Image 1 (cartoon, helix red, strand yellow):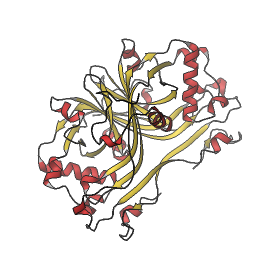
Image 2 (cartoon, chains in turn red, orange):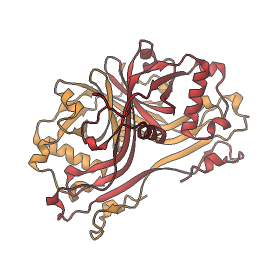
Image 3 (spheres, helix red, strand yellow):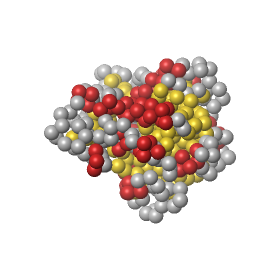
Image 4 (cartoon, chains in turn blue, purple):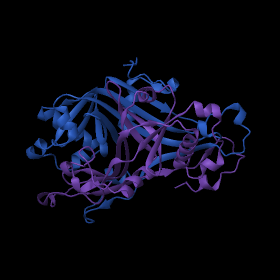
Length: 210
Length: 210
């Protein structure tokens, strides 16, 4: 890592390109979902929950899904995660932008055959959605494990792209009367809505509320 | 619309499939960005701002980008927008899920040649990001218009997929001691951060703050 190839090099706004593993991992760790692209006579893009374990991104899917059927023949994938951090409002429409963190992994998906690795991946996905939840829920039964396929994608060909900071207007536009600035965006968690109000809300859930 | 084809029919959880144009449009109108998939020897997925005008999704890009170079040869695309509305925490890990709204458009991108349509599309993109902003910013100059390419994708082959409501556990798991329920997620807008504090914050920006 650290040196992009033809496919992963950021072309537009190269100053926004990030190739350090730490920066790529940070985007996948912070993003709840990815959008996964693959080709099945035509391109498809599907939202999926991911989890990162070391150098691997794990995804899961039911056996009958398009992606899994395709995968049995081997399939190139693109896994992209994006967090939008703000609306960037310049005086000129041309320089309007978003502040964002985005990461892309290109690679060949591998179907995870080993039950131990499969359990580890599914556990990581539960804990990615909500840290602590893996310890406080029922683990998959052997039948459920059979009904779930896990894909592993190596974080090898990868890059991130990050924009931060205020809008950058052209010199000539600085005197225009329009308001300009950044409107920050965040994802907030609301009050948990329990199935059974008699079960106390655990700390790891309560802590989420923004 | 209203009847899916092989490519757009929702296979997994068919009860979540939505094929009415109103429901598909609502997802694109609510989502700030899409993830756009296309093939360039291998699959690529890129986050892009979109705007819907009637039956068309508009996207924009700089002329040198991979997608645009590819597009000159004609390119099939998949435009997917996803809003995550909640973490769905079942007692069993197997039935964990997300509440979400997702929409997919499959189609061939058309490069917009007409300057009038191009201006309309770019204006729609600015107003999609922030309603009212188009009237309160400088429109593109002829040079800026040349430096921006606009893609049109017809909303024709399309579907949406929506999950709402509480977790659904198996009967056998209802007695397990784990907390279960939904944690709602929303995107909130923070306090605007101005470039020039002397310019008053306009109403259409101030109204955003959650």
